[in-house]
Image (cartoon, rainbow, N blue to C red; front, top):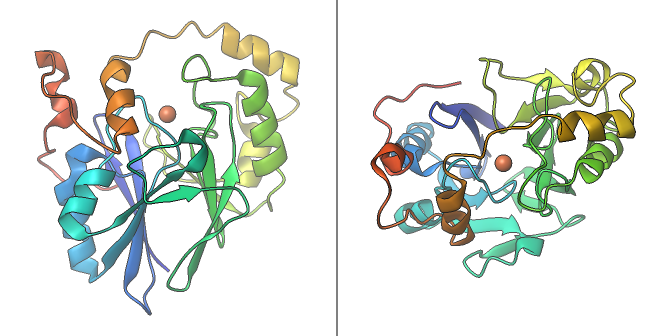
Length: 249
Ligand SMILES: [Fe+2]
């Protein structure tokens, strides 16, 4: 498998490029609209054709590049079926693997951060979206978030995977790139070790996080598979402007 972990610094989002070396087909998991040029350049450099973009969930902190990549490269848009996005070409459901070339993505429904959230298992690695972050997890206080559901998703769908499965999250805010199931099961500060459901519920309720800057634009834009609003307040324009450098995670 050809593999790249790409970092978008504004929302600290990791986009994952998975390619099949035999067929030249690729998918991008959670592409970001400001990084479209970077992603197309990377696909070109690797000689890959983008078959699908795949979303873990409806993001609140950035706008997906799914629609723009479809226009530019002819890729198809895969998104969780339960979110019922009319713009999606393929609705992802638990138990229905996504196959491209020699690579299979196994969708795991992991509600809690959002109700429609999915993680994807591919061979020796799992893309955990915002359900499980390195030493943390996504918030559960909006978009039908539910701490109890997240606890169960992580414990029953992710922590049951083999110790050595690599954990690739949708974000990291501290420069970390990858973890493993064993590492998170033992040491994740929110969900690992002996943390009980009651303890997790209280921890999440006590976080008192600020209202996200971009959510009121990102969620409607992402329900259209990646449309930037016509007008944005000056301080939010950066969320729709192409990023200039191309840092890699
Ligand atoms: Fe999220």
